[in-house]
Image 1 (cartoon, rainbow, N blue to C red):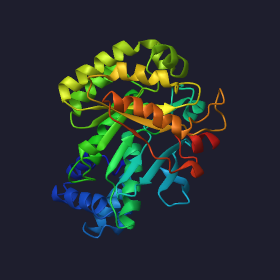
Image 2 (tube, rainbow, N blue to C red; image 1 turned 30 degrees about the vertical axis):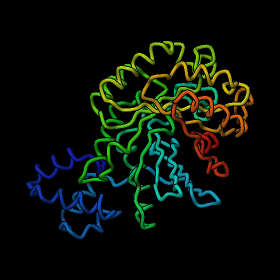
Image 3 (cartoon, rainbow, N blue to C red; image 1 turned 135 degrees about the vertical axis):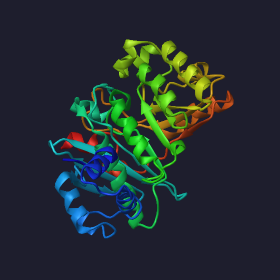
Image 4 (cartoon, rainbow, N blue to C red; image 1 turned 180 degrees about the horizontal axis):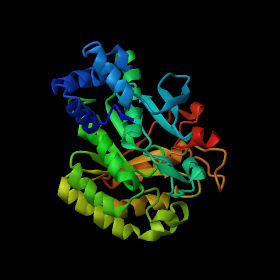
Length: 343
């Protein structure tokens, strides 16, 4: 059995059974444009073909375990259960501007052990298959379609380190951005990494238009080593050199994520260090208010808003653009790994 999103295997099956190639186009249109949710409901192909597909492939491998929407209706968190009883998460964010963004997972659990993240508790359970990643996007796009709106942005910023599952992440991007499928713009897809340098090089060759976000969270090696063990493998100097090469090759700005954790990385003097690190670079900083969770190792707390604003002001004075990410999901455990860890 193979996934309905595996175009190559479906076409091989059609070729073996001497089914005309145009039937795949009909199938593709029914699935991705009309969001038909069952083989037997695809009326544009013969009944015999629908039954053949049902015998040889599956529509969805993920099961919905839990869905919760924030009180203001802006955020929906979806907890999926895989066939082998693992839990992964996706989050739909409906912005007041009308733009809809989906945050998806690339692994079940995560091996990076960042001390502020709920997903570390799970460890790495396994990489997700490409179709399990696509199914998260498909489900959200279908949900929004029923709300008479569309999915505009996808961020690989949920559970897992995308570059440690690069082959499946790559294939999933190719599917969701295919014009005949979900037709997302490559420019509106962002991949977030703690940084795995080898794959950053592959990424800029494969997806020169897709955005790159780097989980920075500290402007120096001392603090970053404490909260992000991956930094011990190589220092910030090496990372920044790689990112300079990325910008030179793609001419795209890098988005730097900086979670504001009280008494850890929010000393105002660190704002100047951050400027020193990013000055003259094609960069944008996203300040993320920390979303505390019940198993945090060191009882991390969120930085007060006024301190985040002071931190941001320092960067603005030095000409480094930044934004403070809106918090619109605290009431539904929407930070990465919170629901899955509870399960």
